Image 1 (cartoon, one colour):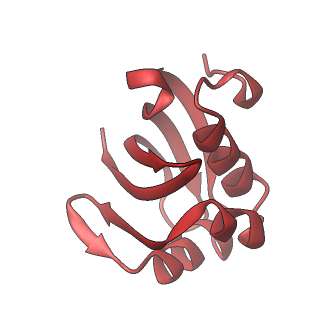
Image 2: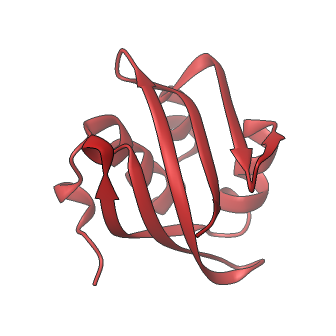
Length: 107
């Protein structure tokens, strides 16, 4: 059972999930600080390249199973055209309403 996106606790994370699920590049970029960083399975990634590959060109979609840490930690069923469906964990660092770092990987 997934949590409806509009019920996610942290408004910035909620907007991130909305941007990913609607494949809205502009909204996705607008949520990130200028120096935002990320990792995927513990490996640092260029956010723009990662997002293009894992979200936008492959139709990525997040179904949030649960959240903790005020909505900044989530377990998500993530799917895209490249990898299919997998259970993933996500952790966000939010500063002033923007995401300065996010980490994802298999759960």
